[in-house]
Every structure is written in structure tokens, then in C-alpha cells.
Length: 87
Image (cartoon, rainbow, N blue to C red; front, side, top):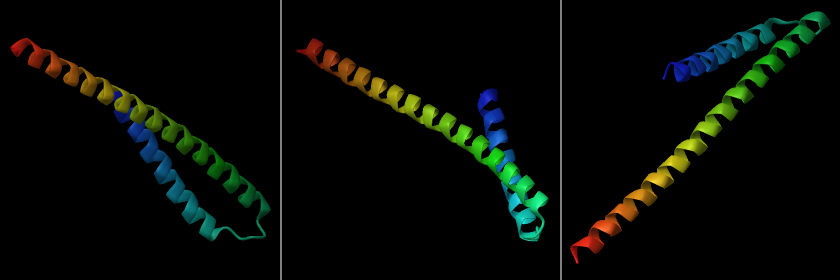
């Protein structure tokens, strides 16, 4: 559970960083090439981090779906076994 909290905190930190970068992007002058290049690099780093977080969430959802299907299959099997024992 602590690992999930760490990943959640990392995702929140990335979103906060993205909001700050958006604010910074509004104030940068178009003629300030160095600031624009730095901003693009920072935005790309955040984008990669968010993509990594999305992949982790996607993997967790797939794992949860697989577990759910297994539980349902087990429940169906256990239910049919109980019904067959009654007759």
C-alpha cells in the first residue's frame, strides 16, 4: 500500500510541476530562446513521467481485471459444485 501512495504522490507532484510550467510558459517571451528551450525540456520530462505513471496504472487495471475474472470464474465453479452436491 505504501508503494501505491508513493506512486500517487509522484503523479501528484508531476501534475503540480506541469501546472507550474504552464504558468511559466505564459510569462516567457517568444524572443527568449534559451527560456523556451529550457521550458520545452522541462515539459518533455514531465510528459515522460506522466506517461510512465499512466503505464503503471494501466498495468494495475489489467491485473485487477484478470483477478476479477478469476474470482468470478472460481465463484461460478464453486456455485455449480455446491448445486451438484445437493442433488
